[in-house]
Length: 318
Ligand code: PMP
Image (tube, rainbow, N blue to C red; front, side):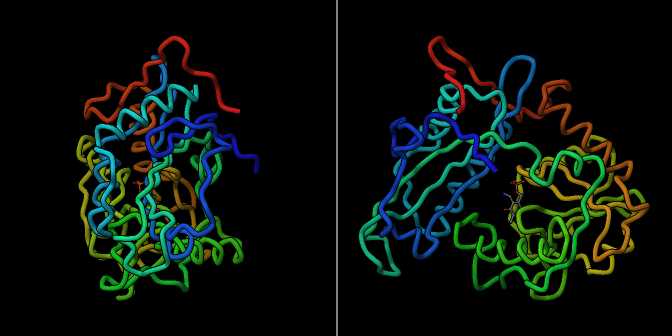
């Protein structure tokens, strides 16, 4: 797949051309996974691009740094401005934004705090529907993974850390090898946790259920928004442990995530979920979600940050 990257990368406070945003092979993060990151989307609206839930993502990024004792050498406000300017400079209509904070070159100690500098980069790429455009309507076939999510006292699941994604890669590769679009991992107690890069919801008798934060999930920004939208629509939402077989018995199921947006799940382990296609509540939530991010429904929760396109900016992705 050809990468449609933005022309500029924001790297440690400066805008540099994509090709020049490089690091040494000795950086700590490359060896030990000592990075934290975010995935954010900017959507096309009739009034220009708008970033979805920028502050919520920055909040989580700083939370991930706090958990891993990473002292980020920029303020939230500086990074917020850097992201807005980068999206404008790169001239994307819509894009995926990847802020990355990592421990750099300085040594191989497992306590890197003294020796390794903290570096920050922000990249943008143009990325369509993560699980395929048809998946948003047709739904995806998924399987429960043999890999579990991390035990609570091993890796801190609420941090979005680079190293945690070796677990996600095992889940995703296994799913693909078994012919599924995605895998669902259980937590170490055997309850449903999440997909390799998505949170999960099921619908039963008109109520929405999703695993609690204690089920080794990442606290998804989209998850929170969907819970809010469900509240707006009068759909009851419950965070509670979900056993595997409830996936089979659910009327509907779907993934949420910045990349996956709201993707219906039509089967689990070869068993159709409900009627084996996108259900009415999933569809209603998608309409509301996509309506807001595309600027077609008023942004009543203040989730969008519009991107100003000053003269001279917006040189286009390549
Ligand atoms: N869980 C994992 C493991 C993820 O990587 C993601 C994607 N960031 C999510 C859940 C969904 O989170 P969000 O809605 O904030 O993108």
